[in-house]
Amino acid sequence: MRAKVNQTINLNDYNNVWVIAEQNNGKIAPVTIELIGEGRKLANVLSKELMVIVAGYNMKEEVENLLHYNVDKAVYIESALLKDFSTDGYVKVFADLILERKPEIVLVGASSIGRDIGPRLAARVGTGLTADCTKLEIDENDHKLLSTRPAFGGNLMATIVCPKNRPQMSTVRPGVMEKAQYTDQPTGELEIVKPDLKQEDIRTTLEKIIVEDGKKVNLVDAKIVVSGGRGLKTAEGFSMIQELADCLGGEVGSSRACVDAGWIDASHQIGQTGTTVRPDLYIACGISGAIQHLAGMSESKYIVAINKDPKAPIFDICDYGIVGDLNKVIPSMIEYLQGKK
Image (tube, rainbow, N blue to C red; front, side, top):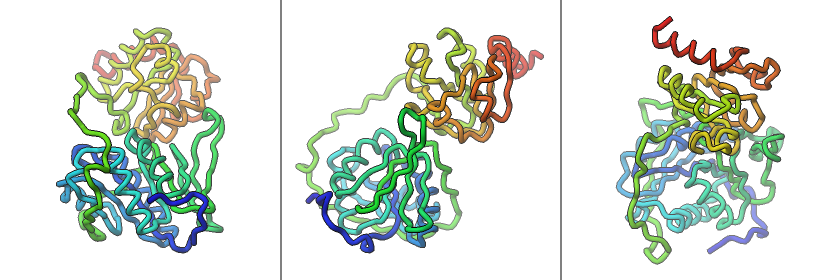
């Protein structure tokens, strides 16, 4: 049964902070650990409990492991019908639990799965959703959730509140928040829930899984990212970026301009409309520093910029800047790293 969006509710009936976990083939996705880290901060400010909700099958041990990340409770919704992801099945079991237990805040990863179920969950339980958040805070005065996200093409940051409906829901981009720290001693408790879910509740059938050939780009977990921008001039310039990344043991990133030009696959795109990263080292090569790109990498621990334009905005946020021709600077760096200098 769906809740009505315009219904009058008692905000005091809603408590605790929930993280909707994401799992792939029975393994918890990294974005879940990031959400737990952020959810813990929010729960502490509100003096409420932090709960992580997992839907799946035959993964009890994996769910129990989440208790090592300082959560108060892990709720495992277990059913054979939840073994493989389905929009219908996952939305139903999560929505049913939200309507029954009334959490105050619900966080979902802004991954492909999270972007699929997040809006549907919000509609099902009769509340709003702030998508692709880069910052979450609690208002000091009224304790409402303040969800901040880029708006108007990334030209400004909008902070959004949900004053009249509950739960307050946000999706958070992977790679934006710091991961929760693993502790040797588990905290909290595990609860197993058997959902009211039938085969006829799920309108789709998974026929088979096709694994893409070739090396998969993993920008989110990369410790080092070397990115190329319009300053490369041609697609061939990415062979130089790849070589530098290989020397450093990193991944190759790109600005949107290069993806739009067809120089590199969209899986490498970093920025507001691409992937958000926070590696230990980010090297921006020929990237001017448009705000849309900065939204996806400004939280990197160290940023090195290489650009021939000394007035490029990227130099305003970098830790180390090199003003020069990248076609001379990068080969020199590669030679040094290969021990040729």
